[in-house]
Image (tube, rainbow, N blue to C red; front, side):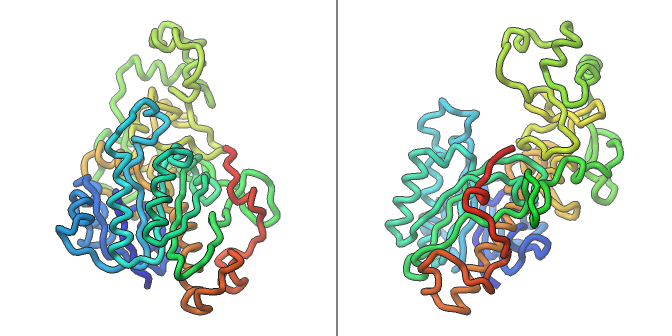
Length: 385
């Protein structure tokens, strides 16, 4: 098995995509680090005690030994790049890619993958990452992908950056070939929908983490005020805050009435027959986005959010309700991670089976590909919602 390091690992959504045979398999996590105690506890439960809670710079700075690995994966904290934080210049989180790259160099990896928010793609930090990678002998490629095109029942547009040792490959194909499509396609299945992910779940019970077995352990509700319940009932199927204003003006917050444009997802209902909107850390607050259940008068539950991220029910989360919600919203969707992992495993397998000079054309030999469907380059990176 190929060894991986997961930096800024969170609860391990990206590791799951690489290590679990349901998504890819063929990789073994040998080290992970994150500063979130609850997320690290979840990682340890699912992958082993080699996960540590701490400051990545302690390892990048040589205070601790780092194991050798074939690949480094991870997502330096993304809020500094987020479209929700456009004014945050000088955010310290923007610079955390630097210790990431230091550890890529230190562990002897052949490749690295960074997953991050859409805003990284055209940022100065992306150019700085590529420059630093070049200095340590890693050419890079980057792309925007939609997790819905890789089997996640969620529209989530992300930046992927891949780097590889130039001494091993002159070029590699990237991004991974998509596995699902929003259009009719003779070979690819349609994108997975909200109904596919959560349609079998009963109404939630209680307001606390339950002692029952998955999936019901995380399928608990909230404790809304009577006014909130009235607001939920005023939003029709497929509706949002503008429908609330139209149907129950007296229940609509004054700030929403004054704001006549934008924010169309606020207080909105998910659609049964589409992928969900992007799941963020406060999905349990309908005022934060389109997080109302498609036809029940409530926000989605932790179990529903985990499924919309692509987590299997047997993945174990540690911590409080808020801890778990944060881990879910910050995770890399395992189906997207699995698609990346299958692509990379084919490249690594090819290196050992065929030698490093077989990728001069940037194409994989037919028998080394994990998905032989011929899809155009433009279709591979289609981002439509």
